[in-house]
Image 1: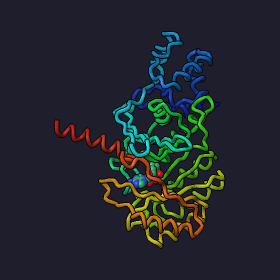
Image 2: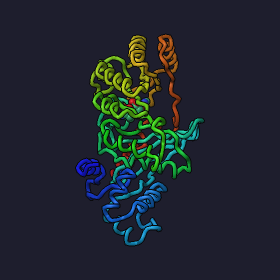
Image 3: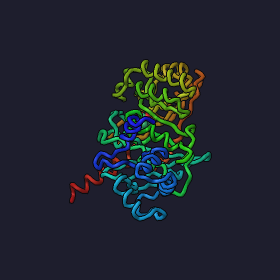
Image 4: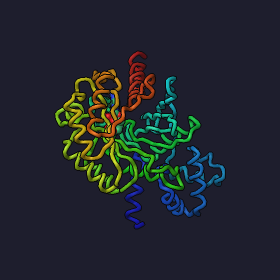
Length: 366
Ligand code: SAH
């Protein structure tokens, strides 16, 4: 790789405050190269990455490295473990929710879902979110910052270590908008699927977006065999703009989705949270069916999770059933998503929100 290109790529791995290189965001090749600049042979990089894969986050614990080298690594690279601040476990279905404290004062949440076919983890891609969706708790305090690829990787690894489980599926459907942090998300996808890294199949990874046409086109160019899930939530611009202020127009979004399908051959899915008297009419079912058929997209209907601050109500079960039937009659591939972790602040952003609020109350009362 040319020196300038290498430098540009590595810039994504510099931590703002320290200007040190974030070792967790380096690919195996980059790590080898960085260590060779320090005059170290390739086997040292292998030793370091073995420790990192085991969740060791302190260079001084890498006991098969000479002490002097451990001290050098401390001065060259930043490295921090996520701290588990809170966890919740559903008595209903074993779903676990984890709030991780990051190397600064920020926190994000991760959800572990246990299915018959394997364990799935839902990870955050940003601290907060700037998309402003009317039904979502993640966006209430706005965007604080984007996560690094290493931080996303650690959500997967530390959820595995904390629960002593192996994860087979990853969904980027937690806090944040992945396409608003696309460079780091692409780097994360590379790291998590690397044969010398976590070696997880890209076919078992889903990226969920509120629908940013430019980001969808860029992702399409990468031709990755991931699943793209578009949070549609309304089939007409009037309703969609009301509940999703980032709506850029359904026609533009559909064209980007078509391009995605053509260049990757991967069928998309639409997420559709059913909101009482907002997006659950017969007319909207007909419009949604037309869009889904145009793209061959799968539709996931989700009963809205009630978020106290948002005041929107889920559609009644009978309305959801009728809406589903209308889609099926029009030959749409549709599922109603089983709601997991209903007893543990299941919706994305709720646990972090509760944590921030309780901190605020603590400050107010103390
Ligand atoms: N920004 C990305 C990913 C994060 S949100 C996106 O928009 O897709 C993950 C999913 O949860 C999205 O489909 C989002 O619309 C949905 N969601 C957010 N709040 C919800 C709620 N209260 N009830 C049901 N689904 C919700």
